[in-house]
Image (tube, rainbow, N blue to C red):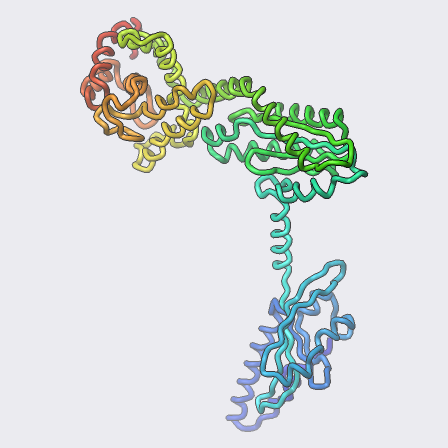
Length: 492
């Protein structure tokens, strides 16, 4: 491109200068020119200038690069017309002209914000118009991202509920018959979130989303409707084919590994063979079927979740080693008998001994295995586990009736425990019994941050805490049965 320099554009010629004073002025103009040139040539804005005769006398590199041309002569006619448009109006006005315009550049339509302002020489002569167009690829990327997020679920990348509801109307056409719907609900997600944190729950959701997507055709609409609910629209799919898709998905989900709670999903399906009728109503029928399936599968599912949680507890906590010396269940039975508890009450205590620390599954392993002395912040995190355990138990059939016992098993008889600071008989009996038993086992077990106590040291500590940490009556019973619960083997 044969550009005119800025001095020519403004009808200014700084050369030649003879005197020292004039030479100083010339240098100032040169510096100003260099600065202006650097700004315009490196600007992310498209900048051009038009003289009073509608000639384009300057374009910066941004324009040439975006249009992929090397000179003004190669710029498309419609763009040149837009660059000179409204010049007469602009030069007569004191205000900036601003408007937007779409252009097709290659195969891409772009939107430009265009600003035009008059150009004046230092002597206030009107010499033309300056144009600026604002456009960046970053704006386009952001626009595309916003558009994508408006149609997709941010966690899984599947379509969202809004898009699903739009497509369920659009696909209700004769050419898509028979059309099928599958509605699925992830099992045990709340329990997973409570036990292992939302990060683990999100891992399961993403894994199931991948299975759904990989098990579907390009024309199928796979969506996450929110929370733990998914749906698939299957055009040109009869009932038999729908069942095949459902079974394939279930088999793939069953094969998923390396999750703390085994992923599973309950489905409800419906097939529409005729055009008459609202597909959204059919979706409601599929949803009802899904909830019925969830209820039917519930008992088996709860057993699986309980088994998974028990395995996780066994892996996370190694206190079971001590049971070769002291049988916790025998201790519970003996204390229970002295308290005149019935078999059902004793069994609830035994179940509590297995699941009292279930809330610790939400605590990072790094903290549970920390060898240094625990900080105040560490203890704050640890003290949350009874409440987490309560939420897990209350949501789990088979554990819900010991949920409160889990919540209060770290309360102290004198009211200085946690999480509620209950006192005396405000604390459930099972929690008071388990507080002592749990404390005893903690004392005679190794901890990363301290050494274990001897049996005698543990007994002496319990006696000192009588009426403080522990119920005096239960301490007395414990002392009565202590010799019966210890085998002849030495703990040393």
